[in-house]
Structure formats: structure tokens, C-alpha cells
Amino acid sequence: MADDIAVSIVPAWDEEEIAALYKAGGWWKEEYKTEDLRHLIRGSFAFAVATDRKTGRAVGMGRVISDGVSDGYIQDLVVLPQFRKSGIGTQIVAALLNRCLQSGITWIALIAEPDTKQFYRPLGFHIMEGHVPLIFRSES
Image 1: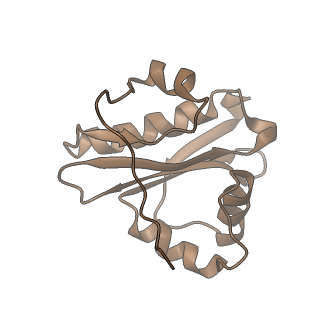
Image 2: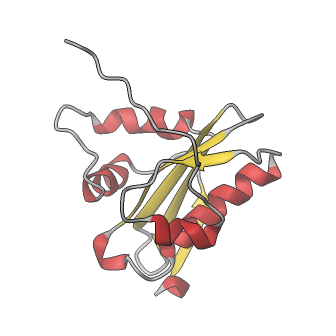
Image 3: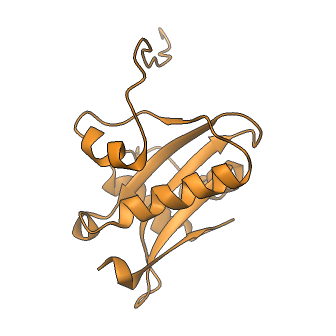
């Protein structure tokens, strides 16, 4: 299946297809607006889309947030359920890592979901001992 997929770093993509990927990842909230996704893509250091060569439709995505000089953070890696376990996620991460490394960014991190260590380990990611991920939550 991975042979039928092309992964590209893109400056823009169809917002409805990207919204469908966010929904597949469980990250879409009802109050979000699909038109805001063009700003999300444009504001990312790198935005990768995996497309089905037969249909041209997006089946996966991922992005890097960075200033383009120092650190890079991989976010929003998702592949549609029917395309998972076929190497597409690995292709997306490889494309994002290559984009960072070509720009001289070597400190690249991400926050993984609980049972995904086995996916990220072979790609070069390790647990950051002594560090704790934190998130801001408004008291209101």
C-alpha cells in the first residue's frame, strides 16, 4: 500500500481533506473553522501530506512547528484508519525530519500518545528522561 502513496511537503492543501484528517485523529472540535486550516498550514515550518496516487486524496499528514533556526516540534501526525500500519506514518515523519535536517535543525521533539513509543523508537526518538510535558489550562 505504501507504494501507492506519495508524501510531499506542501505550502497549501484542500482544507476539507485536512479537516477530515484532524477528525480521524480525534483532534477536531466543533467550533473549529475549516478556513482557518490554510493559516495553520502556512504557519507551519513544514507541512507534509500523504496522498493516494490513484485518487489524489490526502490519507495522512504531519507538521513541524519551528522558527527554522533552532528547535523543531513534530505535531498532528495522523493517517486515515484504513491506511494505517502500512508505513505511511513512517514516510511522513521521514519527510518532516529531512526538511528539518536540511535546514540545520537537529533538536527535533514531539509529544507522543501513550502507546506509540514502539512507532517512534525506530525513527530515532527517545524518551526525554528528566523532562515532563506540560500544557497550559486557563482557570476560567
